[in-house]
Length: 67
Image 1 (cartoon, helix red, strand yellow):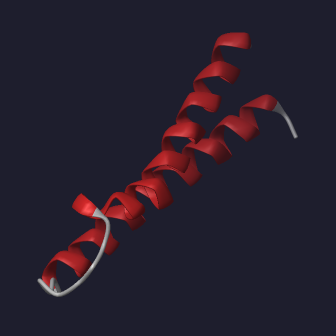
Image 2: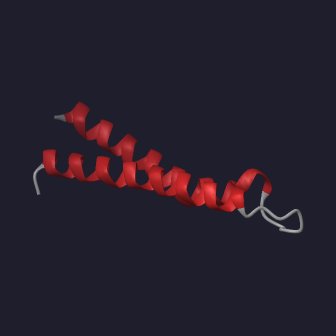
């Protein structure tokens, strides 16, 4: 694959992960239960969706700088 195609793919993956994060969080906030024993501030969802999205964006920027 060309570098341009990889950069485009990383951008799409990152944007999709951010959108999924907001959809999942809105669902979980609407169904909130005080008896739920989740990590504070839904930290597990941040690690599950936002961290990989940030990594995709960083790799994309690194590839863009090296081009």
